[in-house]
Image 1 (cartoon, helix red, strand yellow):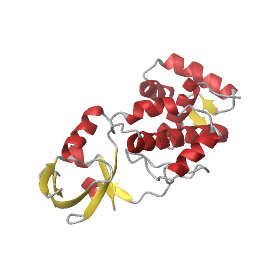
Image 2 (cartoon, helix red, strand yellow; image 1 turned 90 degrees about the horizontal axis):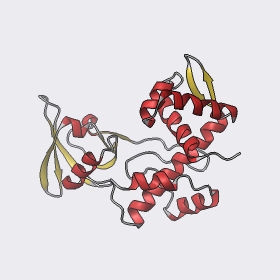
Image 3 (cartoon, helix red, strand yellow; image 1 turned 135 degrees about the vertical axis):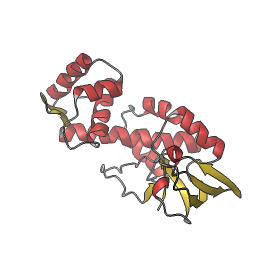
Length: 218
């Protein structure tokens, strides 16, 4: 039984929200994330439960079944592979790839996904640093930390980000800090936790708000 785009999106977001808590995902949390009414979420949860894709208990939230989780991870895998392809081979900017990948992630062809993965060289992370699960649904072990946690003096590179707003992405682009960019962490200031880095032979200061949203190689 196939799923609609909307059903797949629900499964994907239930999966992502479930990673932030040991408890089931609440309908209110889903409604907020999907920018819709709680009543609409409840109706969709009932449909997904009828397909045995989720389990739902009142006051305990919703959890994915094994089948539902597989579909969610497959969607995430496709989305992140398409982001890599769009950025590296079609010239899309880092701030553009997410919305296009949102459409492409629903193409239902396992053969296409496997060929895409092979063509890209089996990438481990998407342009925003999100880990890409393999064909078995296994995510790579992260070997990265946030910039505000890195030891001063280390030479490192940008591995990903946790803030995906257009404003933040454009700010990093202006700084020249795109995925894979090498730089040297020179200093961290105790007063406000801002940092000073050396990038392309230039000294740049980053606020703590910026540093805490950048993943770097450890």
